[in-house]
Length: 418
Image (cartoon, rainbow, N blue to C red; front, side):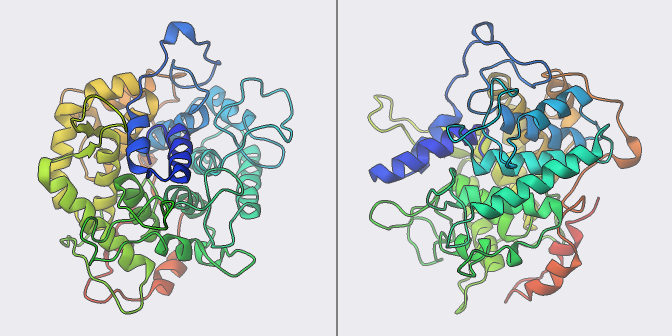
């Protein structure tokens, strides 16, 4: 769930078509500097001061999720801005500068923006001034996602584009938030989102990325391990989204291929890959851009936060702890540059590991996020967090998932606390 998934995913998709692989470009896009605030006119009600062209809907929706996770309700002005971005067919694009002009065939729509907006709106519904409008928007968004599901059961960034692990995972998260059953969200060919996710999973025998997920196959059809895709697919495979909480009991992540692969086993294998990647330095790294003169790997703050959430959700919060400590010491400059979505990622990572986001190193992440947009409503102390339970998966999913060979499944229930 990269901070700038909109731009990163589009670039990554283009890179795969060119045969160079997605990992480097997706990660590099996350660290691209934002335009100077003074050069951009930001709409009233939108979080952040940087150019919203590629991430307006994404950062607004993530801010909503993080605010609800800490007991705050976004202002009605902020909610109305996001509602106004929706097209009549239910879809969202990254950003529409003139929301008064109806969407047409030339309007850019994408599955990532639509899915995260559905989840963000669903999270703020209970205390919103317009719950009926939100219900209508959420249903329309979910219905549109169904119309653009690919034959393999997954989704690409753009309607009709090849399925990828990140887009499929963020849609699964949206379905979780609305109570829809991903296993029944089938394509015309009878394929589910889980079928698509399994097609991106690398076996434990893979030498370079055992247990990881690929963004999508490269031009030659080879699967290449991608940490961002692995974090996203791990959550989706567990039936969770970015608002997942710490699961129990604790269990060290291991990679174990089954004779008949299951999506939950693949998710646990993904957690194993992430744990090993984080164990090296306490954080994930960005490979150098193709053709760059500086070939030094740089820390990947955003994907490290995503990996923390995925590990905590899988019952491996112990393995995630060193990465949380690294984030507390090293994320401030990145968050300040990247804006609301970055603060939201860090808040959700802190919450997933039961770390106080108000004392995250030397930072009060909640205060910093709230300062990037319209002042939220007074905190609701009676419902100070949001979780996958809030409109998420019900007991039917847990019963239907079956037992995973060699590991406990108790975390799937205990991790759904409010």
